[in-house]
Image (cartoon, rainbow, N blue to C red; front, side, top):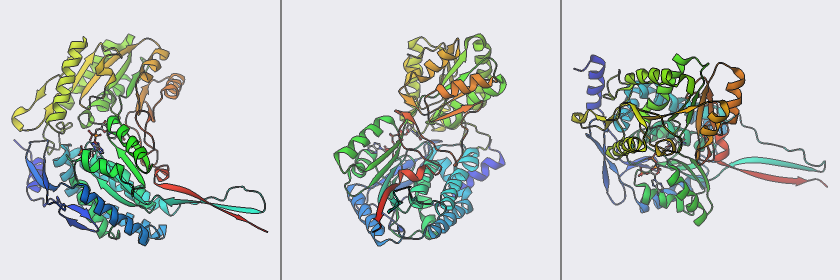
Length: 497
Ligand code: NAP
């Protein structure tokens, strides 16, 4: 039985007018070849919309339009204070349509409506507003050169930027890419993930409404293997910003080298360590251990999938986390009480099911979950799952599962905890829990990751950079540092007689 709030979201979903056409030159348009692809809701498998399936000719057309807009200077040469006004207005328009966009995101991604309304949409609004408000406060440099000279060091836009984003946080990631790339004056082509194109298409129209000149932003839905790769190899694209898997990230670096050496910035996978010492606030640490891996169904690059626990509290702490995991039993994304939704699709669900099987065969001990559930819904749901007795060499501890699966590993002292944490090809995020300031800081400093929490998990804000060490990527999203990825530094050297 649906409660009233759920019923409201369901009826609103029935009345949504969903845009599936590509956004090119300030207008929604079909793919040039007229092809479409259905986008399905992971919550119940229903068809949400037929979406333009853009190909290579659409990409070439969009690149030409983006290049022409850049050369005309309609945006690239606009005063930063004026670009600011457009971005701030865009953020306001997204906020005005917050419920509609949150609902689209819940339907398309399967994210709980409680999350899309409280996290995804507000975070996108804040990212765009913050980047807009920042851009007319960024000063260029005059370095301390010899007395008979003056050097001007300016930040200039790259030109045409391609952004390729994944399906797990489509709206937030789109905002993390578009806000700084547009704020710095680039023209941009965004390729959303094939599974989740809807929110990016919706906000593109709002950008035009906010005053973004035609041709500055195009959104091209289409297959990564052909359209995405073509963008990565394109000689008239100056910069590529990517969030997605490490495997595809490696290919994109090669594409850059094989083509025009376009600036290529990557935000990739993770297998993040969450280290708990016996002297921590165990109640809070247990809640966050569950949040760290079950939030968004574990389909989070920074998920704290390796819970590394001091041996003398291990049994007690694992019991606490198992108890917390019950809160994360999956449910209908449109029910405001749902904490965890479905996996994005049947392929991802199968990956999770296969890894649970691998964990069992590797000899880890399954202490919670382990099964697909809610099969009658038509969606792809999996229980929150915990393996204890995991060795860091097992595949479930080394490979990114991208599902609600936690691996618990024990340690005897801080050095061993750090060694386990760092024994990974990834270096995206992590956390340490301890009430001893020395332990907490020493461990936090020694773990090689881009973002480390002390007594929190998923802490962060638009004001701080986000990105990975090692095979979790290069470059940084968010904060003023994101502007570096979308600009070239140009020196003008002047000498006096
Ligand atoms: P993915 O398979 O790498 O796909 C990401 C994007 O790349 C999609 O738009 C995809 O298009 C496109 N793509 C696929 N093959 C391509 C190719 N050969 N050339 C160019 N583009 C291509 O990743 P995903 O499964 O969508 O997302 C999950 C991954 O993203 C995880 O590894 C996760 O850790 C990572 N992630 C990282 C961060 C971070 O900030 N570090 C944040 C979120 C997610 P299609 O959809 O058409 O395949």
